[in-house]
Length: 244
Ligand code: PEP
Image (cartoon, rainbow, N blue to C red):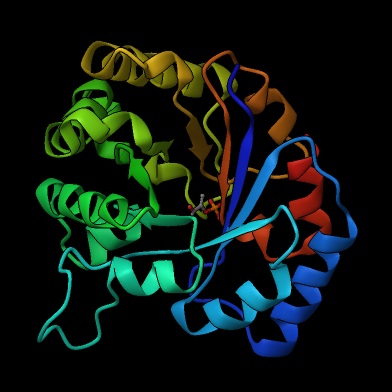
């Protein structure tokens, strides 16, 4: 039985007062039937950890370095994330693949770095609109996931996967539950074939999930929760999605 997981991706949003208000709203809405987490900008990890400590709400980062340490100005290592109690690190978000030229192999190395320090990578995969329209969706997501499976090898079953069609992120255009389910089924079959534990792994959907579409998406047999961007910035919306 897979427990639903809902993760807020704050991206580069927030301020200390806004974060305090948002987290207070989330904490006040407990308990949740789902597992709930927020992935916050690095500089807010310490305060987020202090605010959420003792609750069942987890926290994490939005990226991690593939390096363990050294001359990598501006980078944050998995060991540092684990010092701040991070449960999760998002890797391979489409914004990083597109704007920071992150390759499949780099994403895989980041996932491996996270796992080596006990931080669960949330590995994002997803096709662009052009790729979908030219019938490449399945090939693209399988290629992206395959790089991570290959690198993590026997640890691959420890990751969380997030299917995030690029055309649905921040656009207000959501994949239909059927479109999302079809891709999730492909990913689960790939995970099952590679690890033998795909049936127990969580595959999240991300891309314009809102309070009014979350329940339909999460009701699909292979959708185990969501990675939530814009709607994670308002406590009422995020809480409604966590309850969906
Ligand atoms: C995301 O950034 O991971 C995301 C899914 O964003 P949004 O919910 O705003 O589409």
